[in-house]
Image (cartoon, rainbow, N blue to C red):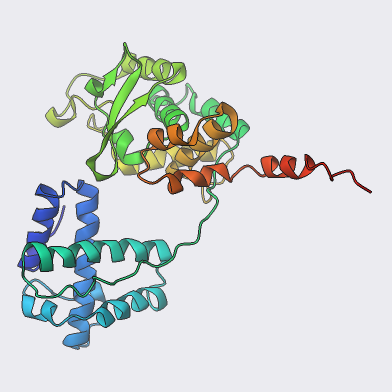
Length: 325
């Protein structure tokens, strides 16, 4: 829930614009609110020094737009530096906040005309080093599926369906928890999900996914469901739509049961695993993989073309000079 009463009016106006015009997802709106509010608290701290040094405790609810008009690019750079040196924020976190500030100041200067100049117009994004994604091997993936099919777990069919969808479809956590039964077309073996930026895409379901979903639906409770959860595919013990945290707990428990490192692997690593296995074993075209994962940029998908060290080793070994003495 966004604490609108803690925001200055111009921040709430920006959030309304992002919801109604930019059609941003609820998660993006929450991120915008958190990132921009923190920036405004930093500005408040530096323009009206107090004994309070914890940004979370600084009140910005009555901040006047005149204070925003005085912000310069140097002030934003100082905030990004504060994040890097004091808060120890990663480059990816800083990049996310820079993106939010760009959209925010563009709204203030070009849309609402609340300020005359845009201090973030020439704001650059911190460079993010490319990392090879962590993922489960094929054997580890099958091991995880095996332990999840534990009949001693009364929710084993639900949990097995969740793990199966993650490992086969590479969907995001938010996409999985928001699946409604009506989103699934059993005849055409596909389902529609809402991804980042409220973009809808189609995910095709293989035999393993369809079997897992159908097995779960046979035992899915239909009585005493809350009105807003009746359509939800995956339900919690409380007979309501399953939450992100519950799914994360399920995955962590099953990873632990499979003897896998829960500090190394997570829900998002299962998405990496699905993409990697499809690329390594399925000869999937990179463009098809991009469509399946819902990546806006092909460069994001390309990280999966560099994860198999055995392919690199084979390339070197296949060099015609490999056996030259």
